[in-house]
Image (cartoon, rainbow, N blue to C red; front, side):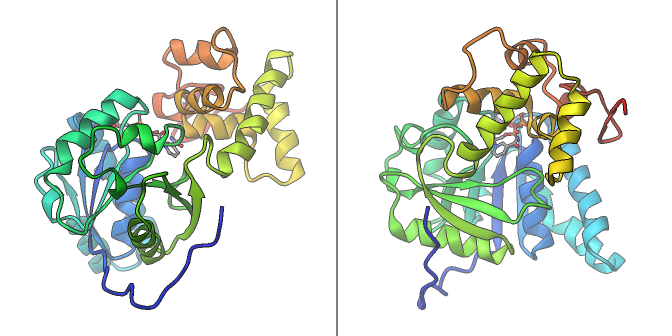
Length: 292
Ligand code: NAI
């Protein structure tokens, strides 16, 4: 990792319109956050239900973050549900935040490459796939960069800007400018498994699963980490991130056994954490039901 370069002369890139594909945990929050920062964001998803939920979550965020009704209404108008992706060709920044499956991502990028505005930043929010693999099949693979946001997006200021082996320097710098423009902190990292943050975080999470499997109550594990100073315990955090994502990251880093641990079992049962209402905890009204 290295600190991003802030160079003079890069002012020409002024991102105003963002198009986000995937309106799940991450995509919806990324789009809404861009709107809070003054931009226009169009949000695309295959599922109408997800799109509706994502827009509703965005509107909640506007109420929380923006004071006057006028600003909230203006923000509502700037967050656009776009199931067909008709706003994509006008976007200055396009961010993919769909399922963590290589073939699905490759297919999506191939289908949108020809529709992009010249000079637009093309980014993936992948947490564990190699940029080089995702870019396979693109006519211009040097255009793709990673913009790895953290969950929950409104609270976490860091965004890893991932430079793939082929990513052009110009694209990396534009991506950093975009991150700064939405009031987050860019950190340039190489396209290695786990980038920087997950390399540190994943062993901690997997150890908490091992503790849970050895019979420690989930609340005790989380409380111990919180007493240590963490804002939330590792099991609650995993539920928030999504157990499918954690399982994938753990396996990519070679930390999670291929099958048969609690994490894989919960994923197989469709218990993915907060987004499905149950993971290590049962979730109600956005909160884990803890037994103190
Ligand atoms: P999610 O499962 O909550 O949402 C994915 C969304 O993509 C769903 O709404 C689905 O309907 C939609 N989708 C799937 N295929 C599509 C397609 N072809 N076109 C349009 N929409 C499509 O997933 P989540 O957690 O938001 O993750 C998205 C990406 O962000 C993944 O690559 C993940 O690795 C990454 N990520 C996730 C983090 C997390 O904490 N959950 C953190 C950082 C990155």
